[in-house]
Image (cartoon, rainbow, N blue to C red; front, side, top):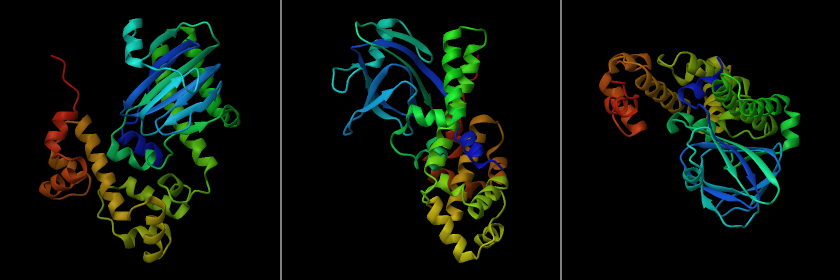
Amino acid sequence: MDVLTDVLAAAKIGGVLTSHLRADAPWGFRLDQVPFAAFHAVTRGECWLRRPDAEPLRLVAGDIVLLPMGGGHALASDPSGPLVSYDDILKASGASMPGAYVELAGAGPRTRLICGAYPYEDSVAHPVLAVLPPVLHLPADRSREHGALSATLEMLAAELDGGRPGARTVVDRLVDVLFVHIVREWLDSHAEQRASWLAALRDPPIATAISHLHGDPGRAWTVDELALTAGLSRAAFARRFTALVGEAPLAYLTRWRMGLAAQRLRTTGEPVAVIARSVGYASEFAFSRAFSRCHGMPPGRYRSTHRPATPE
């Protein structure tokens, strides 16, 4: 069971290219409180990432930054110059997202940027994104050391420049792949950090227990049974799981069940009672209460709110 893939799918973390920029200094734009994870990759030149209450971060060709929880930020040719709204830039250029190609004319050095977004269902994505720092900066030298990450970025840039048939599909897939490589690289370089859900996946006993939970979420698991799968005593397992994952085993199971239920409500027409049973609830009423506590609304309203509109 690939637990990370499982969570990315349930959280509906899917990347989309938002823009491909060619900017000649001086330039600067701000993105106001984006409600998704965002990434920016510099393929030529250099620029500055600017955030409220943080020192500007210089980025050079080959650098990648991921902002896991989004938030307001800016990119500019210098660390302190004026900024304009990116929405205004799009309107002025006549471009539209996703995938806008934007040129910012100036007399100074040229920078090229690839920018993208990763929308997600917050309650399910939490274990992946909440454990990452507000800004995950992968300098060019680290990207090159992580060969797959550097190769993915090169292929992404080549597809954007090539104009070949099917490029849109290839770009979208590569943006997804880029996210996984970024998370992998961060996990590999922070293996010493033990108190996070991602670090738990590197701990064989706890990773085994999590894999069992994901593989059979409808089972009436007990802490004793999970401890047995991990090869630990009940007390040792409960302490270790909570320390690594950040919540108790059965609390994690409940949140995972609610994430799976939300995914099925969004993507299938199955009756609520069927979905309830699939995630371990014999009573539709008990399931509805648990779902409402997690998602802030009952299953029926969640489905009507989140299902895509049916074409007439």
